[in-house]
Image (cartoon, rainbow, N blue to C red; front, side):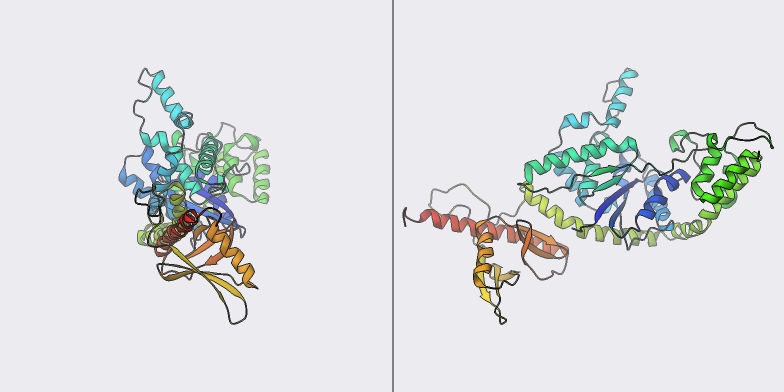
Length: 465
């Protein structure tokens, strides 16, 4: 996994983006995605959409519009991980692994669930009336989104901070149960962007679909002008000074303007600019920024196959990161190959837990005088060590492999053998991630089988020999 700091953002596909989404989420996220020291993950949260939307066409249309919006606003899918949540089967699988360690009491305290049950009680209904298991377990799905990529930071509003705290609790529980002293999951942190603008809507309240006071992001030019002219203002006449700090019209302008433009508009307010002229200036400033992107958006929406191709490529890129990690998690919880599995001692006296395919170890000397060791499974060489200056050094590392329980991990499309976190041997590249993951599982079983045979042989030795 990359050493860069990982930042993950999900966008629920239940509606069309508006100016508030652009100013508060899309624009700052696209700017952040260009940082060289960060790995950025952006996904369309269509599984989450199903929790509150049972309109298939709406979910599909929203997916198209939101994906097109991010791409039109400058998100480069080549530089980030940009994918549709439902294209990653690793997410629901991890959700189940996490569900099995998540305390019911933790989910009982989730704000959305408590709000729904409280509303039911106030109306005299059964507390759980109309509440689905999807709503109840929503925080676990969100935890899976975050933990699958071990995100360090998750930009959220204050109302979502609890979900990040719950993801931390779930990760800590999983690490405790299955980590065997390792931190399988990074504990994520909520990243609250205090300097990101919250755009007021047509009536001065926060721009939100809940208040029906939004201005859609991609309105045609004249429709945008009409929407801006509909922003509510007070009754002050032209020539009367106006207070910019208490004007949501000024706040909208400031979200798009440069410092110099904002200062000029502030002075115009103090000089008594007419509301009609002020609205025209606001419209012109918004349109100046959106017009080039609007053209790109319209072209993208008209070619959904282009967006589909970008999302599928993004999913493939994300799965290349997710599959090896999920393979490691499956092994951690016991979803493993039966090769090398421990079995109860049999009455026949045969070695318990020993299978036909055990790892074979061989140390050898290179032409340049250095020493290495190789590990074969079923007669096929799979892992070769690094070079060591002498046979004693190579033998010591090989002994740590044979006597311990090294980690077998997939890195890109190869296998790495690690002892105490250090890579001591690796494989050649495989044709694909699935082949690498399958052989990694086979290697784990074969190493376990070799250890079992060694222990059985030691147990058979006469005491004192």
